[in-house]
Image 1 (cartoon, helix red, strand yellow):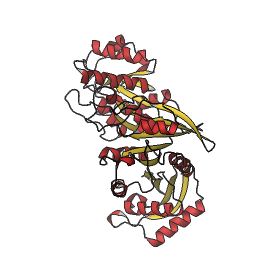
Image 2: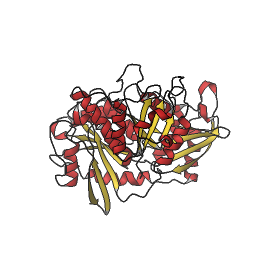
Image 3: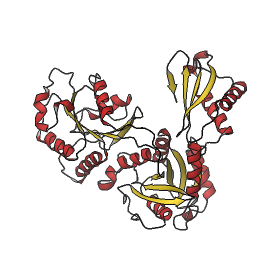
Image 4: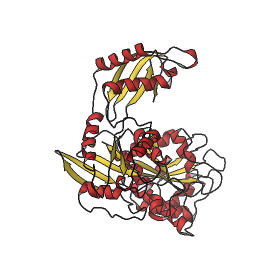
Length: 435
C-alpha cells in the first residue's frame, strides 16, 4: 500500500497559499480573506489521488506561545513533506522574513519550489529580484491562483519531483489508531503491542509523532500506528497538539485499515464523523472502536446512538473495548485480517452483471428531470478499495438513491466488511462521473 506524498505550502500571511490550495482542489477548502493570518491550522486536500497538499498558517513573529505554535506547525509540515512550495506575493520585494522561511525550507534538504503568486498583475516583479532567497530560477514558478495562470506547468513540475504513487506490496498490514485526543489510543496501542511503547497520560496531546510497532498474528505481520489526536479546527491547543493534524492525516493515507476510536464516556462529535468520512474518502478499511466501555453502564444505549450518528458506515464493524480489562482488544487483529481480505476481493464480471440486472428488475433506475438512464453492464477495475465501473446511457443523470440501492445489492451478495466500495458511472459517449 502506498502513502500519498505531501506537498506543503509555506510562506508569509496573505501570499495566497489558501487560494492556491483551493485552485488545486477545485473547491473552496481553505478560507480565503484579505486579512492576514486567516489560516490558523493546517488545511489538507487530496489532489488527483496523487498527493496531499497542506496549506499552513502564514509565518509571523512569535510574539506569544500561540504564534510560536504556528511556527512549529510550519516546521512540522516541512519535516513531513516530500516537496515544499514557498509561496510569495510576486508584487513585493522579498523581505527578511521571506529569506528566513526560505532558509528554513532549504535546510530540510527537501526539494523546494519558489511560487511567485499574483503574477498576472502588472506590478509583478521579475524573477531576478528573488534570487537572494537561494532558490534556482529553474525551480521558480510564476502563477496566479485567481486566474489559474501557470498552474498547469506547476502541477507538471510537481509530478516530476514526487515519487510515483503506485500500489506496492506491503510487508506488513498497517493498522492506524485514529481519534480525538485523550480517547485512549496510546492505551490501546500498548495493549495491542503488549508492552509499554507509548507514553500514556491523562493530559491531552501526549502523542505527537506516529509511534509504530510490529506484531505477529496468525502468521501475518501487522504494523500498528499510534497517531496524535485531532481536535476540532480552531479549538486546538497551543504546542504539540497544534501541529498534530498533518501526521494524523498522513497516517490515514499510509495505513491499510484505520481503527476509529470513539470514547464511550463522551457524546459522539461531528469531528468523529468527519474523521470517519476522511478514512472512507481515502478508501481505507475502517473499524469503529468504542473505548472505555468499562466506565459506562448502558452500552446498548451507546450502540444505538453510535448506529444513528454513523449511519453512513453500515459496513463498519463495531468493537467494544477496554484497555484496562483487555476486553476484545485482540478481536481488532481478527477484524483487520477479515477487512484486508475484503479489500482484496475481486468479483467475476458475470456475477456482478447478475446483480446489476436483478437490481434493474427490482427497482427501475430513476434519473433527474424525468430522464431514463440505462445501465448496461458493470465491471470491477481495482481493489484496495474495490472499484466498480457501470457502463450505459444517460448515467450522468442517475439518481443518487439508485446508486445507493446498487451498492446495497452488491453488499448483500458480498458484504465487503469494513471497506468502502467505489463506483464510477460511465456514459458510452461521455466521460466518467465518479462517486
